[in-house]
Length: 400
Image 1 (spheres, one colour):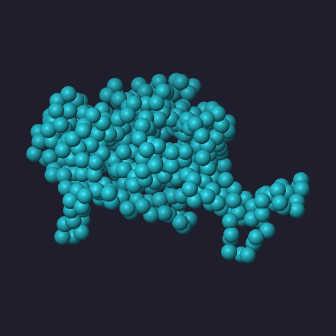
Image 2 (cartoon, one colour):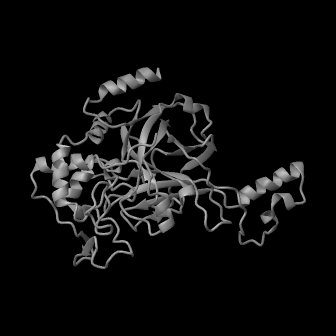
Image 3 (cartoon, helix red, strand yellow):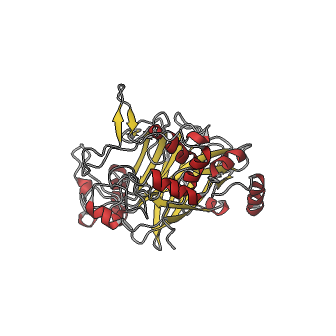
């Protein structure tokens, strides 16, 4: 039946669809409390999605940059299910080592994953900038990091539960009770929700207005992360025929944190059983039909003095955003907008190690950021499409 459903949906989509999409399968049961081992995932249709190293900006950490200098794209498997109340995703990705967050260490980093949703996705040409959102185009980000149980000081003078279990005076059932109390009293869950409208605007949502559940399981050199959230709340309405979502993973072994991650572009999700959404999936999936060879020529003539990317030795390291993987995590519409109106999304200012004259933006009289890159709205449509086609090729190969 699942195969038949896949064929029906695939047949409803135009042959112009060029990229992957996810099918969320309708489920009549309860999705509360599911994890990676829940039987419900046997009915899911898993799709291979590619995540690319985020290279737009460079982290100011020499060791971390060296560890990640040769990163390739990563292929992850993603399944989705939903019911009348919630939508759930399962993300499976390879990782050679297990790295866990702990409050008792200041120099270790955790593996983790995140899902991101745009608040408004009615116009596929105006989706937020991937990763952090953009001005007037907010995103909701749900983050989960691998963690271990640790009972830290709780402000109540409770030191009894901070004792190592091997040094506690308990055995058997009493020790099990002690372990349970440590989990209940300790800081064990590293789960965060954020809202963001561009770089440096990310704000954690700390009240009860948003809710999600996530878990991570590691075995056989791979992580399985599960995520569940309501279809609708005060921030999002995902109760549609199709929705966009983006994924990211962090590798703690390589000091991954913040922007040092691998992420996808916006991926369309078709909610099977809900009417509509086919056109949405199609619009999100269509790539530029331009001439990439001519596009490379135009990009070389117009962009390489400032922008760096693989194969271009002329760009200044801190003069403008690095484009090495821009084709992996950007939509076609975003690339086109960046050429015609570069001030629509302005990434952070130059690295602190850069020359003071290498600012990426200026401030207007209202304090708004104006990109140092001039708009190319004078360029003819064919040339813009050719440049977009070439920019779409700028991405690392997928690790085998």
